Structure formats: structure tokens, C-alpha cells
Length: 246
Image 1 (spheres, rainbow, N blue to C red):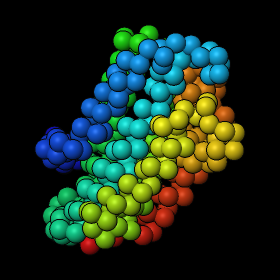
Image 2 (image 1 turned 90 degrees about the vertical axis):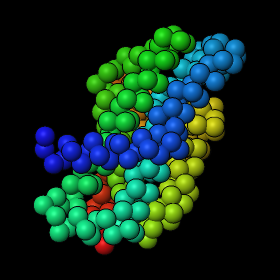
Image 3 (image 1 turned 60 degrees about the vertical axis):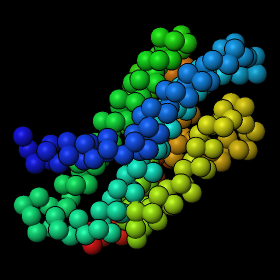
């Protein structure tokens, strides 16, 4: 077993020991889908939503919820806490470089995200008869870019936060507007045009809309893909420049 695999499994064990983290990242999105689907009106086609049901709109939104929770809230808090406690500094004198911890955190987060997303989509299909993405390749491209942009932002938060509590605070401040423009409280289809236009230039607003387009069978809008790519590249470069292991 490689060092990276061992470290990833260790980080996964530590993650599971934190009930708050795994509940909100993995259990809460499927639970929220079940709660929303229990509302009869949300299971009826709505003419104002182009004949879609509210529950149909919330599946890609909850996919974004999973990514945002793991990337913006969980990852920065863990890494900043490790720096604060000197764990990264101690790793620097072992055969395992500190960068392996970063890779392990990313691998664990993506694995958790894929598991939670699969559960959300599967529950939607089985319980509420929601459709699978018609444009599968477009959905995968949108999902990967959304994950890349959000994890890059998470690394940027981890780079500048002086402590785990500070990282959690910054992540929370970022999480609420990111999820607002993604449509968590009001689906994007029901938002005013000006709000949607602003949301098109946020990483998850663009991501949810790109996944929504793929769900309906269209290729995601190049603007949305470009916005996510720009956030992924820009935040990654800033995080690499600012990140400190000690």
C-alpha cells in the first residue's frame, strides 16, 4: 500500500470520528431531498418552472451543496488546524512530505463527494422518479469543473486562515452566498434575471446551471464552464502562492 493511500485512509478515519462533518456533508443532503420531496406541491409540475417539478430542480442544487460543504467548510478547517497544531511542520521531517497530506485530503474529499452525490441522485431517481442527466458527458464536465473551482477556493481559505476556527468562520461566510446563488433557498429558475446574471459569475451558480443544462439534455453554456475554470485556476494560483506549511 502506497504512503498516499495509507495517509488517505487515515484521514478518512479521522473524518468519520467527527460526526458534525460527515453528517452535514454526507447525510444531510439526502435527508434534505427526502424532506423536500415529502411536500406534495414540490412533486407537481409547475408551469412557471417550464413544467418541471421543484424536486427536479433541487437534485443538482444538492449536488452542489455536497461539493461546497466538503470543499469550503471541511477541507480548510482541517488543514488550518493541522498547521496551527504543528502537524504539517512535523511531517516535513518525515519521509512523507506535507504535500502528501494535501493530496490525501483532496482524494478523501472527492471520494466522499462522489459517494454523497451518487446517493442523492439515486434517491431522487428511486423515490421521486427524477431523471438522470441526459447529457452525461456535459454533466461530468460541469461536475469536475465545479469541484475544481470549489476546492481551489477551499485551499485559498486554508492558505490564509491562521487557525482552524478562523478557517471555519471564513468558510461559513463564503458558503452562504455561494449556496444562495446556486439556488438552495430559492431555485435559480424562480430568481429575478439580475440575480441569476450575478450568479452566473459565481463558481457554484455557474456550476449548478451547467449541471441543470446537462440534466435537460443541453451542453453546458461555455460561459459557465469558463467561469468555473477561471475560479479553479485563479484560486489555485493564489493558494499556491500564499500557502504555508508552518
